[in-house]
Length: 113
Image 1 (cartoon, rainbow, N blue to C red):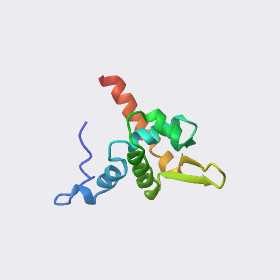
Image 2 (tube, one colour):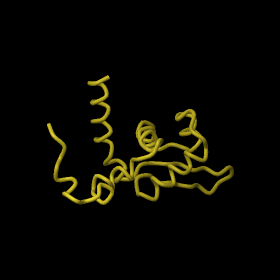
Image 3 (cartoon, helix red, strand yellow):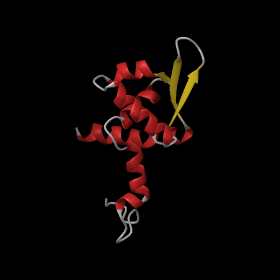
Image 4 (cartoon, rainbow, N blue to C red):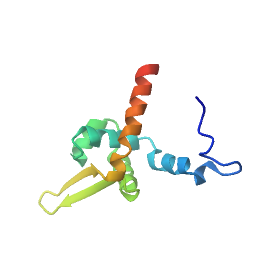
């Protein structure tokens, strides 16, 4: 099996390709873990629950990653007007479309670890 040679045309910068776009969405230390945990929690999770499940991530780093995923259209943030404030995160259709890729990564890890 070889790399899809059509993904990057000769002379084209990787960052300017569809592959580069995908990497820009999923790149970063926590984004794929966030997507995984949201999916594992029936596609609905509150910020503090997500923070607990992630372990050693700071509130700031988690907040930044969630904002980037929301800006990319991967995660939806729903805020409920109540006291105390309630905010939930879920995957959008675009975010849900990443799950087969993550499943393939899981299978690859199982076969090669």
